[in-house]
Amino acid sequence: MINPIRLSGMSSGLDTDKMINDLMKAARQPANKLKQQKQTLMWQREEYRNMNSMMSSFKNLADKLRFSSTFNKLSASSSNNSVITASANSSAGNGSYVVKVDQLATSSTNVGDAFSSAVDLKAKGLTPGEFSITVDGKEQKFEINADSTLESVMNSVNKANIGVRMSFDSINKRFMLTSASTGDISTFSINDSSGALSTNFNIQAANTNVGQNAKATINGVAMEMANNSFEFNGVKFDLKGVSTSEVTVTVTRDTQDLVSQIKDFVEKYNEIVDKIQAKTTERPNRNYYPLSDEEKESMKDSQIQLWESKAKAGLLYRDDILQDAMNSLRRDLTSPIKDISGSIKSLKDIGITFKPFVQGNTKDLAKIQLDEQKLQDAINSNPDEVMKLFTKSSNLDSKDPNYRSEIGYGERLYDTLGNSMKKITKKIGSGSVSDAVDGSIFGNRLRDMNKKLDSLEDKLKMTENRYYKQFTAMEKAIQKLNSQGSWLAQQLGQG
Image (tube, rainbow, N blue to C red; front, side, top):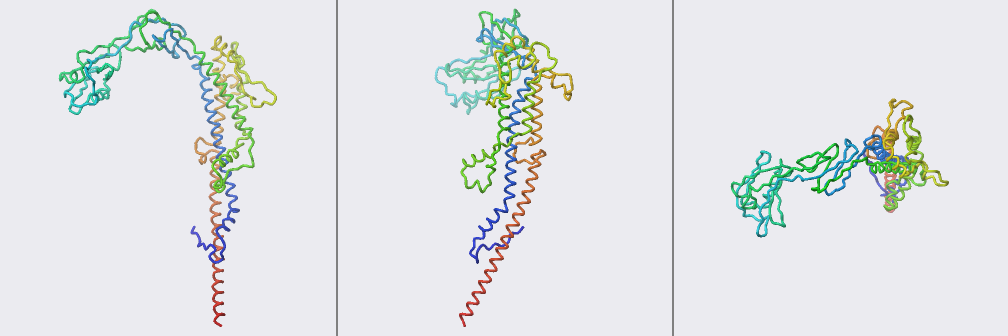
């Protein structure tokens, strides 16, 4: 569209730009209102996304509580950590190991002779030559030339990644070569026929000491290993020193980790209750709305931030998805588990109960509380029953109406949170861009809004151009009248 020629008050002296701008303000009201609705929708989308993120975090925790591995985690403790430390994996069993360490595994080494004076690692002028290091039958050659320094040769050995490292002991002023692995299979050999290694580094090829294996006795069984770390019956032992007496390693169920997991579950549940209740009970403030660009221009950043914080209030007020999620989570924890054996049949039996109602205190409604000592006692006395409370499965189809009453609390919460998150994702989409146009309910609404805005903007442009045409025609008419008036005055003056 070609803009018309605009003659702004040249003849009339009127500020036509301001007059038209004032006229357009009224015309822009429908577009401004639609932009406010669009911004509100984008804010609401962000709020939903934050809630989905929070639910996802709680869902990950519920996911752990669905599986027996969480409840069967084992820990290993040593009676002397300076000699042995240990850890247990899921294949280990409860029990004790009596260990005596007779020898630690060592690396093969070649320690050079000490220099009598200070060593300059960056100095050139080394004696040229060649030497090689052989590991597992593979020979690697290294050259010393006029540009070489002690440091550059040492770096070339280390960068070769042959399983042998060269280092410099600055305190004792000596170089050494050390195998990366340990045990009697970690040996390496040096060929220094040119004498360059011994001359420059004081390392003698024949002085390589072969590493030794670790030797230990576990429950009366003598063992020899190339490494100081090894696994035995699902327990990983890390040898730290030689023992003069036997060390006991004890493997037990890690009850403290389980207590921590359930405490975290209680805290996360209460956190999600807090946030859902806060969002669904916060009333919108009708006096505040999304600001237009023109309104923002007359405000400070701090004022805009404060205004928008109030305009964002109540975006999820009485939201049906969130309220339904909250009600479902509450039912998950209050509904008994059918066909569960043993003395532990509900969360109450392990010290988890709903907080009692206190007059005037609505913040704690639907929240739960934990008696940590009762939980600890239940785990110590009936760990398998505590596990079943969260992990129990059902042979029924998941669509069967009785399915949820037969499964454990971990599975229930995981399923409820997953369904709620799917509903939110269907409504707002899975992306992270607030104004993204996608196949979600919000995405389609934004698409419609964008089309309407484009149409309104086109109409506004046409209206503005029409105003300018009208004012331009007026200016031309006044200009013509002025010209005629001047001509008439001129003619009368001549008479």
